[in-house]
Length: 458
Image (cartoon, rainbow, N blue to C red; front, side, top):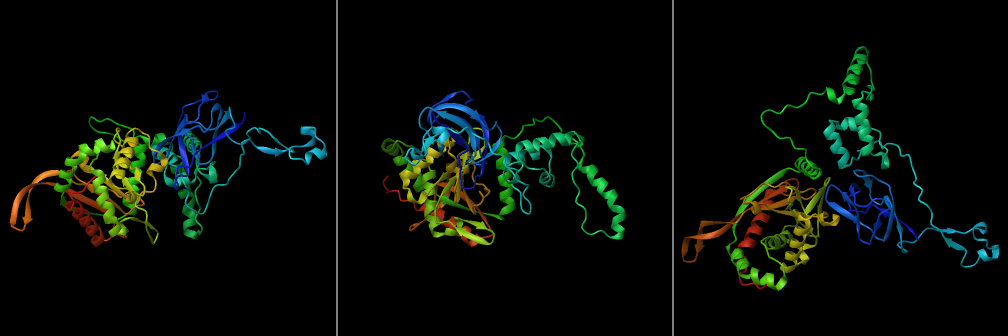
C-alpha cells in the first residue's frame, strides 16, 4: 500500500490560498475515489476537494478555518491500490543483503514507503513592499478593530512571512491582556526643540497603542434594531465593491430599446426549443448574443487596466451575475462565449445558473471574465447603476421588459402602439472608456436587439 499526499488544489491563476471550511472525513475513515474529503473557500467561490484514490485517511495536517497555500499537503491517504508512485530510494548492501555485483544489476533499486516528515522553514518577515493578507486575516482584523498600520507590526509565521489566522488571534489575545507594546518609530532627524518634546510624544503614542480593545467605546444603536453579522461571502462582496469604486472612475450611460420582435420570437419557439434541446430558453442568451456582436465592434469595453497599460482581451468571456438563495451574489463566467451558438449559450447559461444556486460551481467557473452582464429586471427593476467587476472596465445592466404605449415611425406616418420596452444601463471605467465609446457601444446593443430577426430558425 502507498501513502498518497492530498494537496490543496490550484483554484485559478489569481488564487494562491484557500480556507478550509469543513472536513467531511476524519482520520481512520475510509474514502472512495471522487468522494468529497473536505470543503474549501476562496474569495471567489466555495468548492469541494475529492479523493483521487480509494483508501483510508490516516492524517489531517490542517484544521478547519486554516488558510492554506495552494499545492500544500493538507492530508495523507493510505491507498488500497497504486494510487501514486511511492518514493524510490537507492538500496544499500545492508538493506538488501545483495553483493556489490548484484547492486549493479537492474534490481538495485527498491521501492520504500517513506514516512511523512514535515519540514519547517523559518522565513523572515517580508520587507520593502506591500504585504499580502488573506481575506480571513483581513476579516478578523476588521472585526477586532486592528488597523492596517498595526497589522504591519504583527510577526508572520506563514509563507513569505505572511500573517496567519493563528498569528492574528495570538496578537488579539496579547492585546486584550495589555501585553503588546507597539514599537514606536523614532524620527530620523531630531532638532534641539523637538528633542525636548519627543519623550512625552512617544509615551503618549505608546499608551494609545497599548489601549486594550475593551476600553474602546461601544457603538450605540438607537431604536428597535436587529444586529446581523455579515457572513464570509457578504464581507468579500462588500470589500470588492468598495475597492472597485476606489479603483475605477465610474460613468453610467442609459438607453432604451424596443424588444417586441425578440419577445414575440421567443414566445413562438420556446416550447419547440425545450422539446428539441431539453432546455428552457430565457432572454439572457439572446441578450448575450447581441452583446458579443457589439464587443467585436468596440473591443475596448472588453479590456482591463494595468498601471498605464490597456490590456485589450481577445477572448470574450462573459460574466453573468447570479443571485444566490441566501441573497448573496456570484458571477460565473461563460468562457469563449463568442464561439457558442444560441443553443450552446442557452445550455451553458442554464448549467452555470443551476450550479451557482446549488453551490456546485467549480473554482474555474468564476475565473477569467472580461465583461459582465447583470439582469436587474429579473426582480422588476427598470434600470440600475451597476458597479464594475474588477479588473474589467465595463458592466451592462438589463432592466425589466414592460409594455408601454410608444410612438412608432412608419412609412405611412407616426402612430402610437403598445410595444415591449426595456432600459439598458452600462457603467464603465472612464480611465479608458470615454463617453463616446461607452454610449456608442450601448446604442449598438440596443439597435442589435431592436433589429432581431423574427424569421430566424433555432
